[in-house]
Length: 276
Length: 311
Image 1 (cartoon, rainbow over the protein chains, first blue to last red):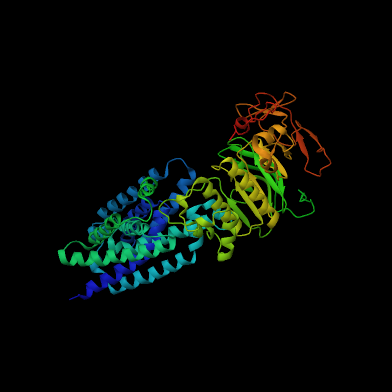
Image 2: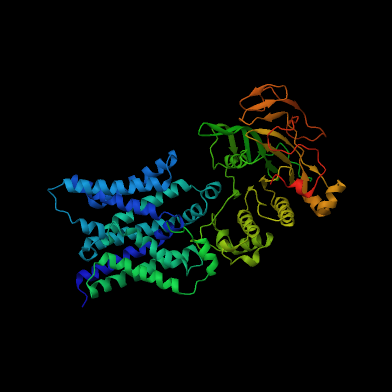
């Protein structure tokens, strides 16, 4: 019943979701949703550069995403434009440059839709290894720097005053995110990566009493969304990447219908702008 | 208090001629002070006078653009920032907040929560605490890790008057039992914690420094706040010899105007502190009624309203 390609898709998708869970929590806590989008959009520039220079796709995407995040840090320090304006410029500029570059390269045939929306059913054995290898690496790194990550998320100055290095933590976090985006691109595509980061984390919030529980729950919810989405895509013959996101959204809506842990009034007023 | 700081003890942190500049403007300049173990130093001054900047420079969150900051090797800091907003999206209980920057034993957490009187809130989410409860939770977190130096940026903000006295009592107890140094930033220009060893008034530079006067003798004060408050709170009498002009320049008592004001610029009369106390050099200032430094210069028959007007 389960074809081999479908099995590979399941294993790769679940691996990615497990990795994305904790990372997505930080994206939500640090209000970096738009930042994640920007890094993801810049991945197309990475694809174009990789084709142009005949260079490894994954490394190329990682380098471009990391460069964009460091560029943003530098621009933020100059403080001339607000962060969301800077993000808007970087996000769409890198996406547009990528598209323009690809159109110039008439000698390569490139499946643009595959990059934009992912092609999880086409993952190879090597891709599965990559997702799990990279995922384990990212998860280890997050666990290793968990306390400074949480502390600098709550208050960077407090973390620094008490002997931590929030700037380094932030840089490390951005590099991890660039890595996950490079890995995830093939599975859910450039345009949908951030949803796999944010939606499971947002869903997990309502059932969590500690950051640690929320991180684990986000992984589990993400994995459920991948499984649900893939089976849905098989049954209804829908595109797999978007189906996964729709499944995640379904879980999120379900979670809204359950009785919240915190009083409704509080969460309604306090969560405004929580997810930009 | 008997714990008058001795100058022989190596200070936890000392600042010498420290200045911090942002975008071509000096936020503070010429700041000098040190904190010894067991010493309480209170920074006061109007809004934007560089109190938080000075405190952050002292603990290394900000880098000094001039001057020297020396911290004891391996100094362990407990910090309560002026503003701390935990995003609603992060589930964080008081218990979990305690181990934010270091891992602690359950007993250590309980003791700190017990000391600050919020043990019953251990399982509460920090977003649901009231202002005063949250300040207590932050204080509990800072003391639980047993710091050498406790830095409290307006710890009594959002706390009512009796809560303020209780918190100051608690800070005193922490100092007495642990012997840590305390750098306190007060939002109040005139009323400081009675246990304060040194008050430093900032307004872009050190305007004046000295020791607080106990007010428990003043019958008016006793009538207003009660005997208990008299043991906890104290007055600080400002002593300025210069005026801050609206454009940021400084007019000195001798009539001269300079761009900024520093301890050794020759415009100040320096005398040794009176009363035989081996304190730091005291810079004596005189007042103008419109000196613009934000202080209330009227002689003080204290009223409840006037005492807290600068908050």
